[in-house]
Amino acid sequence: MANETISPAAVKVQSPFKLPTGYGDWRDDLEVKGYVVVKGAIETEKARYYQQKAFEWLNSFDPNLDPDDPSTYKVEHLPIQTVRNTYEHYGVVHERFMWEARQEPGVLDAFEKVWGTSELLVSFDSLNVTLPNLKPARAPWPHIDQAPRKRGLHCIQGIINLSHAGPEDGSLVVIPGSHALVEQFFDEKTNPSEWEWRDNRYFDKKDMEFFESRGLKPLKVLAEPGDLILWDSRTIHWGGEPTEKSTVPRTVIYAAYAPAKLASKEAIEEKRRVFKANGATTHWPHDNIRLRDLQVYFPDGTLDPRNREGPLEKAEYSDRLLKLAGVMAY
Image (tube, rainbow, N blue to C red; front, side, top):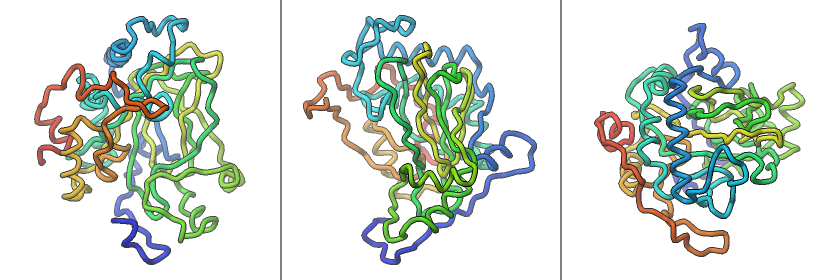
């Protein structure tokens, strides 16, 4: 829907989906808390392999970068980041190792259980490598990735965790239970005329008092290599920074999956165009899809001559991959 076609102030889009419960497993936690860690979705050694491939990709920009030697961490030698510590340009989204990770059986199985179908689309999402103590810690930036007008379950986001995430390390931070209260917050504390269709909404300190007054507190998600972190897009979250004590390069792949039937014909056509161009999408696999500028710019506005039109290692285009990408129909 285009923003300019919306005239009623309080138009809402209700999702027909509700998470399955009563299984006595992690799905119940996802429904109640708004997030969950699916332990061991990928074998530990496979997770280490994907992390090594991520480091090799970074080494293509700076061969002297040694993940085990903090003295080699140099901001000026790293590729340009879309969001802090996050990479989606230079064809990285479609690197072979990224697609291999997206097709891991344990990852697919988790999302199949969430949605009750194996006919899924996947987001062309980014890589995050956070080198500890490279930059000053960023203040929390609580947000959700679902428009205030959208009600109910519309999107489940995912992190394929490739590194140890302990109390001192970088990791996802969530406000457990906030997914069940954000709609009440929007209805009681905001003006519907200011609601947008953009699936991203930040919360300032005053906003957060609504949730704090109801006993909700931030929690850093702890995880091990191979774990899969899932969360409802209505759950308030942000990327938690490592403390000065951390020595672990946080390494994760963002990947979200949704039933293919949720995507419109127009969304599928655009998704195919983005795939062909080796472009990236948002965290949403089935919506919010558009081909963005593939050029990479330095902060001063000049083009990065290191930019690439595609991945260093192209993925093998199996039927399964092409269906997940929306290129081949189920």
